[in-house]
Image 1 (cartoon, rainbow, N blue to C red):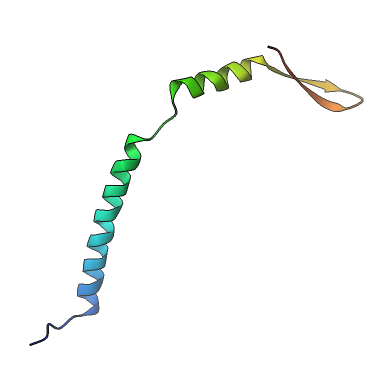
Image 2 (spheres, rainbow, N blue to C red):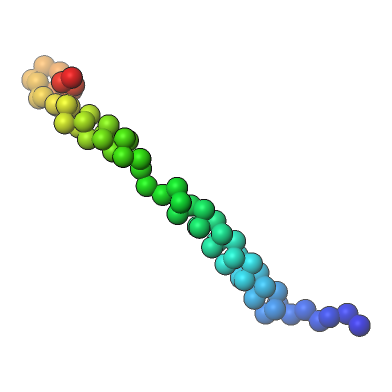
Length: 66
């Protein structure tokens, strides 16, 4: 005898599978979350060396002090 399938059962199974997949994917993503300290240091160094000046002739002028 063939098993009867209802929409409720199918949706319940689908939701369970999606939840398991989401948990497995998020578990992998959590390991890679965040920036490396070297990237953060590079961005901070660049922002400290960047100076934007106003000019009447050309508008804004960016100058990187290195």
